[in-house]
Image (cartoon, rainbow, N blue to C red; front, side, top):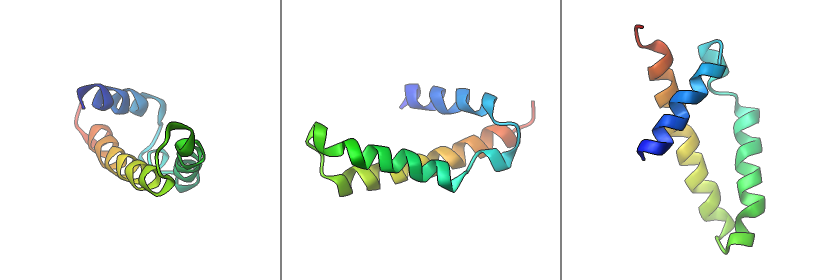
Length: 71
């Protein structure tokens, strides 16, 4: 989890504004890529979709906290 948090924290460096954090079309592209690849790693597509939706949703909340935090 610590590693994932460090990746999310790093991602905020590339986002100029809070509105850059949650881009639904980008989120859907990521989720679709995971769903498309799920069967190749023997994972049911619905499981991959639900897991990644959760990861993305929680990452958006975390990124907003980082961007909104005082320096």
